[in-house]
Length: 108
Ligand SMILES: [Zn+2]
Ligand SMILES: [Zn+2]
Image (cartoon, rainbow, N blue to C red):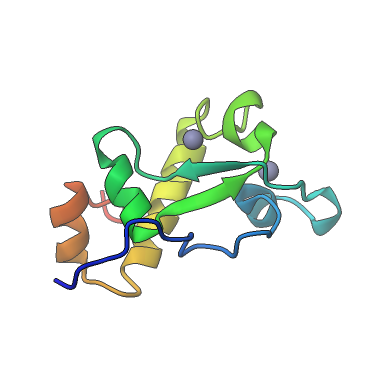
């Protein structure tokens, strides 16, 4: 595999866009500004998320404070991981995804 840059912007959205989950789940008039960067695969996979651009920009409510916040809501976490895997698989194979993250979020 090619050597990759360490800091990469999101491969799921453009920097400066509104919150990823607002755009995905809410009508346009309710979109909020993104204030935090969220790594889709955290914990021991955080560095890989960073290197591959598997992150999104979120509003506070969708990141940590609301009941639909990704850190409070397993469904939201799952949704982002599915989208993250899909984005990764635009460039790489499923085998490469599973090798890197140890799991397949798109078939269970
Ligand atoms: Zn939001
Ligand atoms: Zn986060």
